[in-house]
Image (cartoon, rainbow, N blue to C red):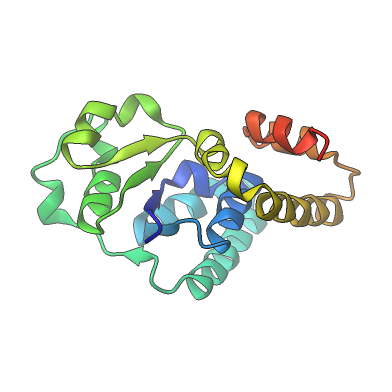
Length: 184
């Protein structure tokens, strides 16, 4: 059974990182999990791009919900009451992960999700770059295909001639960028 992975809002937004992580999920290597609150955090973060940014995020969220109808888990206030994290605003993330039976929290926010506290709940923490690279050796073809689709979309939407390595580095996936740039 593939691991169950709660995806934090900081991984859902920005676009290229999210699409790369979900590209790996589409291969069946892991089962994504999130909550309505995490999706709302993504939509609110997109407001920085202006009114169109939020509308676009809400459209992408609707597509995400349609693609993974079983990925969204409700808030878990009963679980949250017994938990502690350095940033109280992140307790909801841990509570949903625990309640949903996740194996791992995928986040860029290492300091607010200490490994020791997560281990007490049977959880692991990983950043997206390290997480994707766990699967590289046995699934590089699938990951390359997902990355190629993302590169094509980025070129189309931005009108720029992105190179794979630059796009993945910009998306804070430097190890993946290096692996994708290596000769096949």
